[in-house]
Length: 148
Image (cartoon, rainbow, N blue to C red; front, top):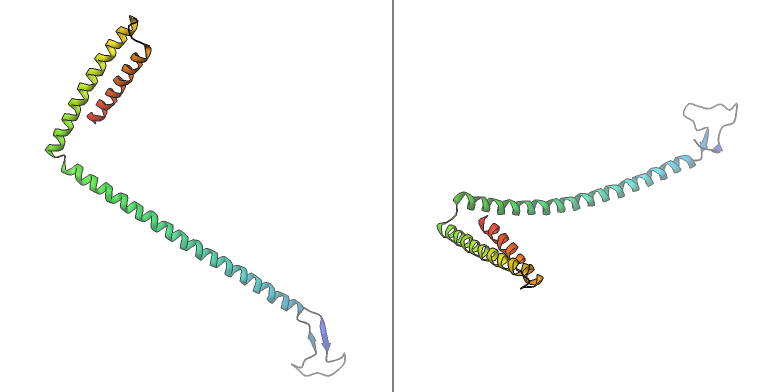
């Protein structure tokens, strides 16, 4: 409501229907308007922030989609290669690599066995045995890799 700012008719006066009897101050009404205007400002700011976040999310989604499409293209190309099978030259190279890795592993195993025997007799140092052990592990790893 509000406070009476002016009283036009006094008690007992004759008045016609629709005639102004008094005026009220609009303090509460004006406060309500200001409150609603402030709420509208807050809502407008929130909507602007939501639009900005939506734009950021769209950009990020676009980047993720682009990355996924690129990955899909690479996987599809790899699948085609696998479905087509290996060329004879690739098979031959792989067999040669396995043969070379087997020879290296055999030599490393023999060297390790000799180094171990010599170490037990005190003819070589622990470092020499450790080097032979490392070469053997490396040769075995290379052989496993070549066989895959």
